Image (cartoon, rainbow, N blue to C red; front, side, top):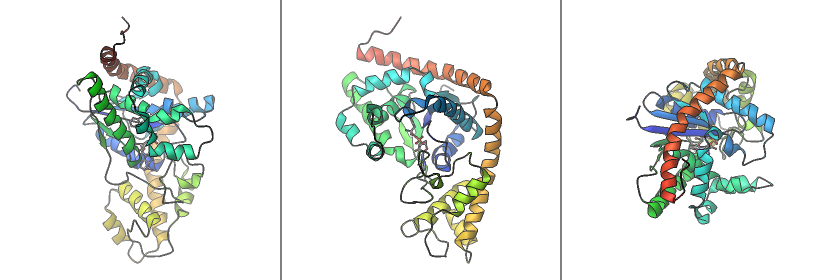
Length: 333
Ligand code: TYM
């Protein structure tokens, strides 16, 4: 384990995971779990940047944890944990906040998007990328598999390593690399293919959640927005809705887009939509069965959360100790 590269990634506990999250992130997490020393967590502290009903948040944390396991993340081989269970995340986030220039945070496009749709904006939403950097740097992660929307946050994280080294010297924080997959790094909304599919979208027709019923999945995909042409071809500019469906199809079937386009020569969009809906339903069937079983046993989930936290804590505490040394804080004896 010691010589394996360290992977870290997480997802904010809002809504339910979508096929966008799965295709852009978890599908890659799953592929990496044999070869690397993987750390996957549920970002419950990040979820607090928007107002949450406490009871619903607690329930959603169990649900997210179960969704990770149901998607095939193995708690034996990986370290799977809950962010708030490791208090070092919040501590390092504060220390990094004091190193982060306001100007860098002002440039974050995700903050601009989110704050334009939110009435009561809190400071946590603004400093959100710093907590994300703390998540990554605490585990000395080599590689961070994420979707395209996290690219700018990853750049801030890398900038913070440089700022740290300029102030305190090298050897404490590791420079991480983002891993952004080639296909499906930005799955788009089903009704508005100009924006990304998001699990916190108010209109649930825009996304397919991984725990949607087969009926819902079929309805959502069949009503996905496409253009008025009839020829199935991949054209990101002129046919963004269809291009999105073809991308989802290609990643889930592991077929090339060219091959799929050939299969639908002379057929209508409707045929493709019906087949894609069936493919999504079939892909998610075993995931949903496993998820339902796991959600019946919260004690078991709690045990796994505790096990994950005790594994994660070792690495996190080690980094924080070095951070205390660098910054001049006295490490508690
Ligand atoms: P979150 O919860 O929004 O999304 C989880 C992962 O899914 C990817 N993703 C997508 N990929 C393709 N198409 C989409 N439509 C799509 N929507 C989401 C995201 O890029 C992400 O990889 N800030 C993060 C959570 C986080 C984190 C971290 C990630 C907190 N700390 C440390 C990596 C490392 C977020 O809100 O992701």
